[in-house]
Image 1 (tube, one colour):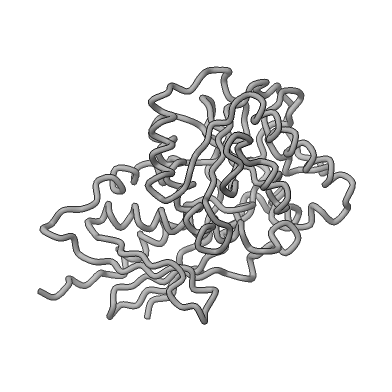
Image 2: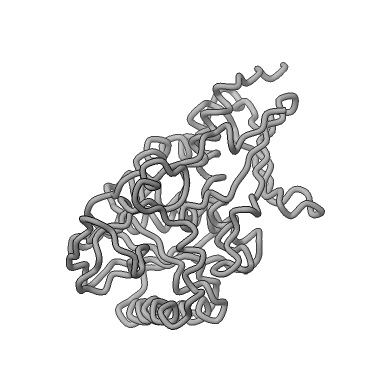
Length: 330
């Protein structure tokens, strides 16, 4: 039986939902191409949106594209399609990160594990606000760990000593930036202040910065730096933030893409559990720091992202590029 054709509206919707994924500084470093005759969505890295200063090996770029890929898979499952996914399908084309064949479900059965995450795609936002000093139930933690495992990654909730080490690494990264005038080059490029924040289609607008941290230990990056932002205010953040470390076995493009998919699956699961989330890779931008962030007990794996989880405001939606700018249909 021939596959039913997919109309342009369906493909556009799938890509719009894919692009709701988080990425470093909301640079949205992805492009998509849809091959109508084969029902393939091809995911490409956009090198014009790379960050040579803070992401010289394109690790964060791959993680962001992996998160978009997970959203695409969730949106496809919701649309009663089967996203048959191949990572890095063309070794001679390193910008082609994934190929997704949108197949029809066998016997009309869709992937409910993916499809049930769909409502969280538009609800998930990065929160740079303080969270309540409230524990996360064990069953919720277990569900988040299972979400990471389904994508071939490990989610670890560090103990007190390990968490302090990670917080120290984040603090050291902030201090390093203050001493290096060029360290915030990428951050400045991708932040949007004043009237630009209201019309931006990418980057982090000032209304998403959150308040300045007056005290507390939560690892929240200050996107304003020394630049003035009106009506921002300061407040206290958590003294005992709930951190989670997302790790992969290896270190390379395939591992980074898997990390991105695992990251987004965890974030969507957390959103459905009414958790607010934020991310920091500030302390992981140097390979040697990623080694220091490892689980001190096992000493294995590659830490790819630090998550901060808790109960509090979800934060505002950040802008997204129009689908016409990121999707080519052939």
